[in-house]
Image 1 (cartoon, rainbow, N blue to C red):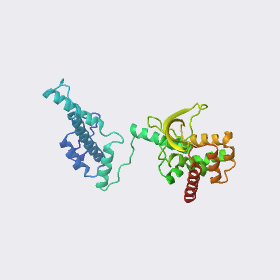
Image 2 (cartoon, rainbow, N blue to C red):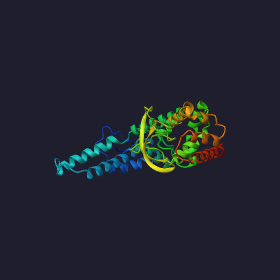
Image 3 (cartoon, one colour):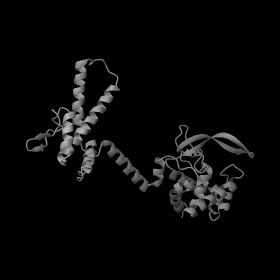
Image 4 (cartoon, helix red, strand yellow):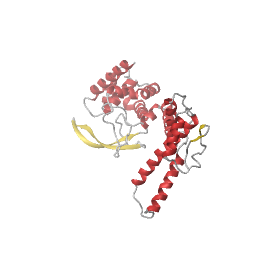
Amino acid sequence: MALSLTPSSSGASLGTTTASNALAADVRSLNQLKYDAGANNPAATKEAAKQFESLFMREMIKSMREATMKSGLLEGAQGDLGTELLDQQLSVSMSGLPGGLSEAISRQLSLQMGGAPAPVVSAPSTLSLARSSQVTAAARTSAADPASAAAANGPAPKGRDDFVQFHETAAERVAKESGIPAAYMLGQAGHETGWGKSEIRHSDGSNSFNLFGIKAGKGWTGKVAEITTTEYIDGKAQKVTAKFRAYDSYEDSFRDYAKLINQSPRYEQARAQTGSAEAYASALQKAGYATDPAYARKLSGAIQSALRVQRDQA
């Protein structure tokens, strides 16, 4: 038995055989459906779309079976016949479902025949629901906590302008809490990471989110990333292995930096110099923030660069 439209003595009439009680779709009934659908019968158009989808599903299942290694248990003419009948019935059962190919075909046929397309009432698939949930969750995370969203989306963009724009929200938030200008933190983070090109990573390649090169001293109880870095010893650059602090997000890095500057007695002079980028950078170097003898000059230049980017983007 097949899904079909059969002509009657009074004209074309729609056979009410449905996908649930049909055995298979055949080419002859499909051709008849095409002619009946030409009469602009919405029901015939819908059935024709189901037949098209059924034939498509049948060919797809057939191709899948041909690409699968046979077990040898059901080989032979009778086994092949049984498999073919099963595939035909599967193709019929899988066609005409909400959100399937038949809906798209039905709309296209209706448009080609000059009629109004059938309203789309489709049930979302499991995959579309999963993707929708992921997008919604990401949107909520981004709105509630941009730094966490940034962490979930991978490393920050590379390059000065994109780096500043990417981290500006977190920097501004921490600046209001700490009193350290956002541009100073953005400039120092940019200098320490090469504007995102040389971020500190764990041995497995995952991000430590350490933007300021803060090392993990004896008092640090959090996560650690161990890397090879350049230190200046007696004025000479040398490669050494050192442990650095690791965080769960970029904003955590900004907060830890601000906490270090505001609570450590060694940076008291730096806290008093937030009105001048040059003085602030010089105070950090004198306090021993970095071993590079040219650190103050380099940091001051990076802060000025961050300030220019902020002005240009304002």
